[in-house]
Length: 454
Image (tube, rainbow, N blue to C red; front, top):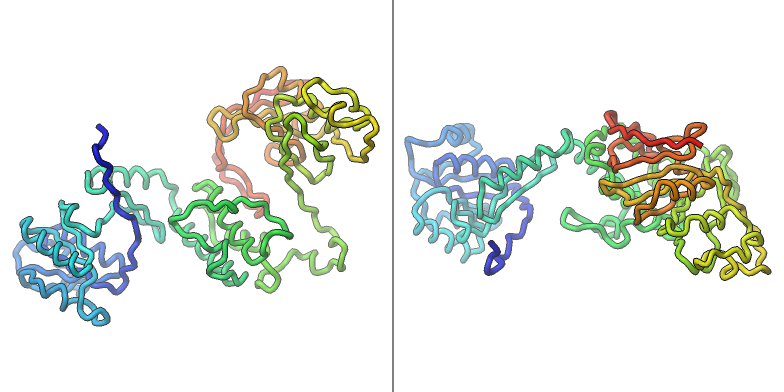
């Protein structure tokens, strides 16, 4: 049933409680839990309650070892202003009421609100300025769930479900990646207010998060920071959880920072002469995104062995696009198919361009409904792709990828196969990071392709 009035939810925030004084009223099991939570956060709990024979055994143990201070008395208003830290003139930092009549709890809550002291009252959300979440902790990783006072048992159930879905050792990996972030800041001398570093747990992706990185448009002091952020964003959680200390070293050394950052550059760079490529240095590949709609004013990119081109919205005119890639402009002139393709309307007979044509044996892949459960990939060659789409049919939206990158994961087609159809999205868990050379995870889900022979 829809609510007549949408109530505002609480603001979820993490409090730095190291050294704080938390006043806990009561001696029941909940009081013991509140003391344990305060201690875990680095605070100093002070128990205020008269002597009782039914003191919870957990509380008794903490009182005996000195981690919890017990004021054996009935709560008084003055306790809020004398039991706190000296640097705040004795005012306590937070109050947790775990027992007592409603009138007493309401009085304590009003007193705390008046003096801007955080207060939590059991089973009384309207009296609280502080709400504790149902939490899961794994090292520095913490996950909290709240139902805004509408069902604590439900919050606990949801928290358990979330925790069960997380891979093991994710907390340790979080610590390692945090260490990598700290080292990048130190080594690359990133300013604390730089764009790459101006993010926290509450922010999402910025408009420049996936901006193409080039030497011309990227500050070398922020490049690696943004790269690490993309690793955390796009690597599967299972892959991140498997990161080891050695992996962190590989991640940092495989992507050197600015000169003087303390990281070694590739060995060949120091021996190369000025203005010439280093001997034996591998040429980096290049990815090009190209439109393929009707009326394009330019020919598609010419062939370069290290180049992979992604043609968006290409399936509706795949035949004409293949001819543009593999045929000279003079041969194309006047051969328009009436679809606004690169024929007489785009390339005049007097147009003479010198460009390298794409070999018909170039690997290519048609990717339809990418990342959806019903994703389909047709891996073939440029000379066979039009026939493959015609025989297998088209499932828009789709794109055409042309270049050697199409063989990077699966390898080239077996001899005699015209194309291979792969059904379904299998996720990213088994992918190998080409930048780091790290080994992929075992147990990758197997996709059985449908092969078509030539």
